[in-house]
Image 1 (cartoon, rainbow, N blue to C red):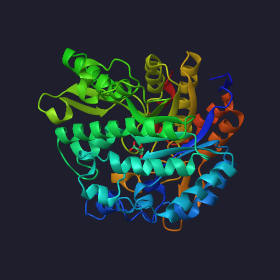
Image 2: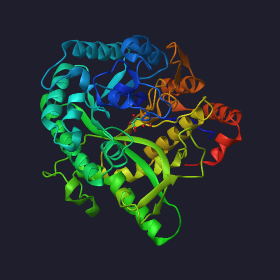
Image 3: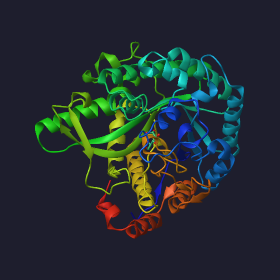
Image 4: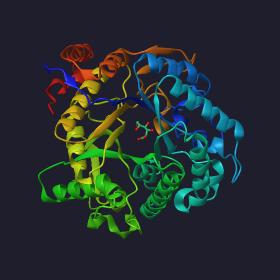
Length: 447
Ligand code: GCO
């Protein structure tokens, strides 16, 4: 890359987090209970104290400001605000007010998620999202929107509804650990109804609000040229990448998105599209796996692998963003990141994905911002603390923060609102220093 790539004026630069992953001290939700069961978390770690941001948010936000961030995605923990049905915790509400004010003081735009994987314990005990939780969830939404509408403009109702339904109710590796496709579909339908009602409620309370979901997109490539693999990959792309968006954007839902996902009212319930993007999967027809919708997904093999085993595939972001043009909505990248032990892959990861975002903007995709996953190393759900996604290293024993080289590189990009050729050189140097295994195919990715 030997030219300067300038981003549109006002482009939002920052990082994304979720309450349970960074706060610590969250003892009243379904995840705390799940973590306490042996064998649920791969490395046996716990979310508390973890990153301990419930206590350290001021120093953390000061650091993000120093690192040039102009936006920050965070979630509000439902179980703190509503510890029991109909009960509001005023101290928790006051705490989150202080958190949001602190971001504003640093001129950092908050992007607030209302449901990011966790439920209050009492919601879980009532059957979780297998049952219609709208009454309770909307009560929570109403309270927080009334409380913070002077501070927050961007709201994300639900993080990755399809991923939540799949991991918790079909694959069973997140709470409540069900393994049933029927249960997963019911949960997805309930979440989408909750999103639709929350969208209407937020707009009634705050007409100028910008409301969306954070939707996970993955590149799904057929594993072979066999027609059945190709058909399965195509169907999975329709279902996993586009059914939810089509239903919420009130476009004609793909026929296979079935009536179940279609909004009964067919109203548009997205003001922009929140995109979480990580990787590419190879898709194979698997006749004996009805629960996985007759497919096996395995990581792509062309690019370098993250610690998670996911293929790093930056050009996929360009392809996926271009496919969103059909919705005619602005896009905000609400997550994109990589887990690794050190920080050799991340600088290149950042550059390559930002170049893909820039290329998409150039061909007319209206991307408004980029929120990297994530700011500080944190609790990566069933993988525990081992999976480090942060721009800033956290020593979980002492709480000490150490800025990684990728964070300084990103800071320069955020401040100048542009990528420069020397950023690229620096990222490639780090990648080479990381050794051949992580660099496999690395230099060859082109948008
Ligand atoms: C998810 C969440 C995040 C993850 C991130 C890395 O997709 O699971 O939105 O909470 O931590 O995606 O896996």
